[in-house]
Image 1 (cartoon, rainbow, N blue to C red):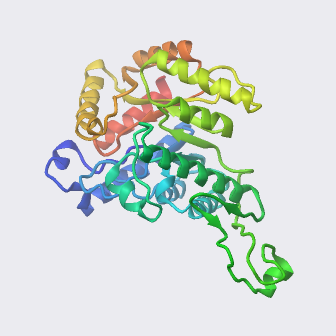
Image 2: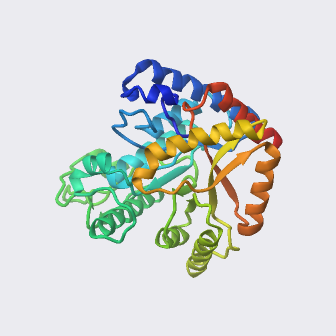
Image 3: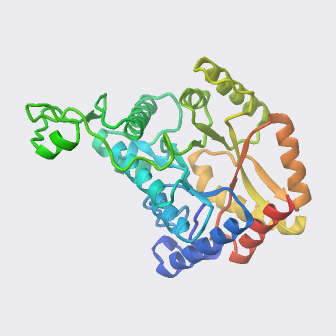
Length: 360
């Protein structure tokens, strides 16, 4: 769910992100759309992470809080982040926040991790470690960002799976050297401190409700390097591309790397395809939705260098045929639907949710 705060004419008035009335309307629409999706049997709903979006696009500063909001109003719908941008976070705060949400929802959480591409906020929030946004261009900044991302994941994984642990990395020392911890309670009922009262290991509590941890997704995967990394780690790339040959190459790279890591998969297994959804009762109505998406994409994403990717557009019959053709070519396991709530009128969004669930 891409939580854009306003319709096109409202966004074009300027500074839409600062309007309380638009934000409250968006929350109400997300609430109804999530409950409707839950009733119709959708698997989950996820939110992106972006900051400082005064323009009103992708107004989702904390996807975990939106997750908690949606989870409190639904019964079965899973909630997730697509994605938390690790280079802008302390990894231990991520582990604790996700684990706590997973406990609160009793296992209705999936997680998504990304590296960050928007310089305005990634550069600002990444200052403590000297990190910034990246575009997978193999530059020095890109390699630094990737190294920090992979180190954060290593820490997160350790924190979720070990009672206590230590980590000595390029970016993080956990715990910091010579940290005093002379606590009788730790000596008697915990662990991690030595007999001299120095902290040697730390652990998070609670752990995730799901064991060893929630399913991990990587939106959006455009490079073989990222695909291979998650093949080794057991994560699921989300591929937002309409280039079948590129997808086939990426899927094959994922499968080969997974085999080297001891995971026997068929090509396409462990991969999620991503697509923008423009579904309606008529082809003309679907084209109107596509026109809205094209405006949004050209206004907000093209300047970052992104192609529009895969778009499922048309009546339920047309969209069903498009998915079948795609599945025949790629044999993927899951489908991620990108929907821009707030940009379209609420009832149009509700109709899209209904049509896909009941007719496709």
